[in-house]
Length: 262
Length: 329
Image (tube, rainbow over the protein chains, first blue to last red):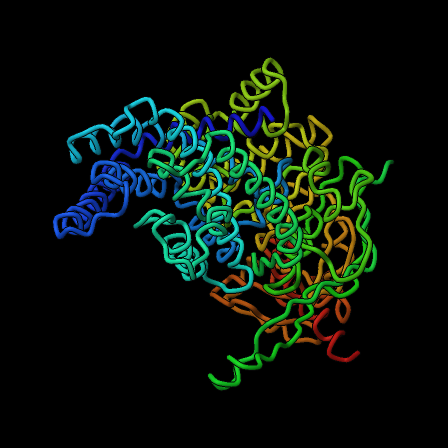
């Protein structure tokens, strides 16, 4: 395991060195969070107030959901590039599986983002919203822990999208499709509890998309009845499932590696 | 001597999508199979340095990629240090080092020393062992300054030195080099060749080297395997190539007469200037001795030089004969 730690460590340092990339990404986060929170301000101002959810809590929910998406580095782009260029082949004769080498690197970069977004992102949300959540600041700590494991899950999904290049020759559209499903079924723009019944919100809560987005930020909403342990275990369950699925997929991909020419 | 690499009846096909109409290609794409490796077999002994040469598309790189565990073959047997490369990838990785001249195993934005450190963890080297090894290799390759710079700032020759250090770090028993001198200038080529040869001689590392540059073959290797169209065309010691394969000699004559007539069977004039002649003698038709006797009868000779043709011409001739043989079969 120590080798994976060192790959993550080097990637962490390398990620933080690229300050321009980190800054522009953070700017986009601020812009999106501002737009989405403004949208809910308009909805509340027009009297459409969801039952029992204050504007402050809704704004924190939206801001933290946006933040989750920005924590994971775009690892699918790297894998997509490796597969298309054939570079993946040149990583296969190393004494560690390519898949987990890239995961370690992604996790290192994720830790870099955690540092940036927890130090600057959460204070930014506080300044934007103007208030702490109704249930106090103590709720932010378990949410930050849930966001970390949610980002790991998001990272694993991205790796799956990256590997899809073996069949599609382009992971970008697969990732975009995945992202739309995550936005819709995960509750990115509105809590799942507000979804109409035909969406079966009680089932959506147990899907990996909600485990990545809605459940975590939803932890601060009143009357959800979720416990931290339940939400965390649900994330671990999905992480385990995705890890097994990726391992199987990776074995199939290995047989499809083709590196023509010198 | 112990066998280090054993390859038997290796076959590899690539599936290439045929170009058809847009709709047909979308609904029912058609593929054609291209045979990259066709029944190759050879073995390498421990510590042997073998050149693996052939024209573009001959299947050299594909074979090396199968041997190093990158590609799956369609059929055939490969055994390297008791492992089957595509099955025992992780275990084999500790036994082999690879350098692909057109690809890099170094992290582009990081100094090479950071890559060495990462690789040392990947190869589970002890800290003291790693420090001693990297110090020794960096000293040997005279790379003290270059390993401090980010890889993107290195010249091709400097990068290649770092690539070879990276591949030798974990003391591999077998080193696969795929065109390690491609794109390098004459001086850098010489340095890289000497370093590979010395590293192999010191550690007893088996080397399998592909290259289009016959200089790599002559300076580094003891044996040459020539392949073409996926077939093995020739396998013999490098020193026997000149004496055994080619039946031509290049003769330079400096003479008293301004010009002489040397027309005879098997003799071609390559270059004729006043008092100087450069002749190609086909020794299967005319011996050099006979030719020189004839020349001496026509003019007093001031100087005589007899050379083998350049190695490049020898290899060209092998390719041509190999292709001819394939065509006739």
